[in-house]
Structures are given as structure tokens and as C-alpha cells.
Length: 260
Image (cartoon, rainbow, N blue to C red; front, side, top):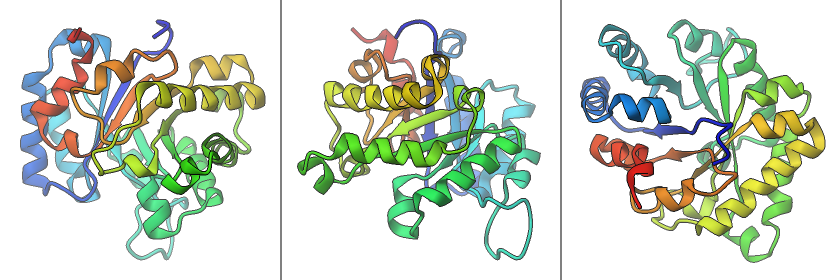
């Protein structure tokens, strides 16, 4: 790390934990984290929509210094969109970060780059921070098109944003082949793609935005792999899936700096 960007480690619970389990998980996590952890790392938890109000109440009443995040949103503020949740609704719950364009949303629900872009803009318009995901499939990696695929996703997702807006964002590199498979990109591979992301931001939006934007790595991150990943100069955090469901395991990832 270069000292400029405070790491952000985010728990993406996906479709796990009912609101009772969510309360217990957050409370247990708060006991496991120290003041030094919070000083060194920003932490966000991203529960399912049905848990958000419960988790918000616990974070506020117990004064737990963990950021509340959401896993997705619609791009409109309101309207006839049955089953959807708007950015404005999330903002009212004091959500600070919203995951946008996760590979599961792209693959399973048909989200294309243009949808990701309008969602990013909608999240920013409500005063929240998007965590915009990008990443290549196994076929694209084997074909040698990782950099071009990721660069195109980044450019499409950031289209129309100002350098100042990009500076406050988070971009998450999540190789699709590593999501939920137990496979993790090597620290060198992850660094290479995260450096490509920063280069694209620099070319399109300037050095200040490139130096400020935080870039996470996601994809089967575990306590054993976190330290080497986090030592890479262009990796500013982690978007953690399965391992974040266990507060003890997630706390060990947050404390990566204490290893080695």
C-alpha cells in the first residue's frame, strides 16, 4: 500500500442470513474487531435487503463503526418496478456502499454494462458509494483477453462520470472463475489486473482520480490468502463472499496486516 488509500474490506453475504442471524453476526463481528482494526481498515457489511433495517439498528444503537452496505439496487428512485429496491430507499436506511454489477447479477440476471452504468450514477446521486464490479470468465482468461475485457467493463461502467465522482468510488476486480469456487487469483495476477484498472482510470479520468479510487479484489478470499493480496500496491481491499458469513473468519481477513 502507498499510504494514500485506506483499505476497504467488504462482506457480501449474498442470499444468506435471515435478520436474526444477521444481528448475531454483526454483534459477534463487533466483539472480534479492535480499535486498531478500525483505524487501519474500513469495513462494510452487505446483508440481504430483508436484513438491512435490523443491521442498521444494531450498528447505530451499539455504535459499531462498521459501514452498512447493500448488494444491489434499481436505478430509478421510485415507480412500477415490482420486487425492486431503489437507491433512495437504501439511502434512508443510512446505507453507505452499494455493490453494482456483481458477476452473479451479470451472469444470472442479464445485467449488461449499460445497466451497471445507470446504477452507478443512481447510487452516486443519492450520496452513496458504488462498489462497481468487473471481471473475466475462465474462457476469456484462457483466451488471453482478460485485460481488454476488464478495461471495457470499467470504461462502460464509468461512462459519463466526473473525475471527482470516480475518485470517491470503489472498483472491485472479481474474476468470475474464482467466485465461490475456492480458486483464487495469484497475488501477481490480481495485482496485474488491478493495475490495468487503475491505468484505465488514469488514461480516461486523470492521475488524481486514479490515485484516489479504491480497488478491491474479490473471489474466494480467505484469511490465508488475504495478506499476500493486500500487500499488492494496487489492491486496496477485498470483497469477501463465503468467508464473510463466519464472523471469526471475516475478522481474520480484516486483521490481515498482523500476519507475516
